[in-house]
Image (cartoon, rainbow, N blue to C red; front, side, top):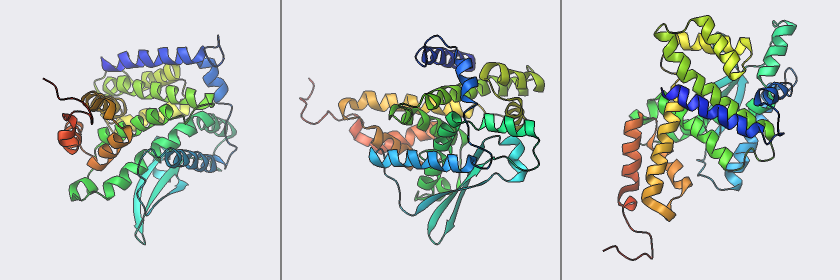
Length: 318
């Protein structure tokens, strides 16, 4: 029930955006045009690195959160064994080298074995709008930064453990946080890409349970992604292939994001004018990769009595 509700809300947001860039053009037309704007073959990795550097610079310029020392992010080709299920790329975790936490950002670029049609489809998939969003989702302040914080956690279980609803929920929260912070200002492709990608995630909430309960066939799931989200067939097939081998992971993006947003509203309501999003996101990251109910408990515990204390300078209530 939640999937169709937020899917429709996201579609309405895309319609609203389309009325502004430019007025009167359907968002699907704008998305089709956006897919023609992409890096050249062999330049996709450089595009991801460039966008990652841009969002990293925004975090520093606006002092949005504390960036821990002794970490870096590298960009490497997606391993052959997962290329079929990672149409864009993904985060490959951290390796510690000489006391530096080195994250691996997998990028699925064009390879020599591809036909001209496959190359064209891959380039449309790896368009500039989506690259700008995926770069922050997988790198800063998404998966990579979450893993850096987790690796610094004093509790071994939180350093070694993982929870996809926390991880993907945080990365999707990061997309909305960076949009609010102005990352996509003056970048219509980035604005469109961010909302279209949210539609992609809401489609997952519908498709995953439908596949695994027999309510939707493989081909129907592929077609749903193509018709509802506008994915290339190759990307839609990669998505559905992934779901068939990893049930219940696909809804984690939307479910995790909604729970973190709900937690933020709870803290914000309790703190009022004292609320700081920087403080909130640092507490979420410092809590580590916990199941959502335990994340809420850990974050509220970290705030402690400050949630109920009156704002500085206010008069005590009667």
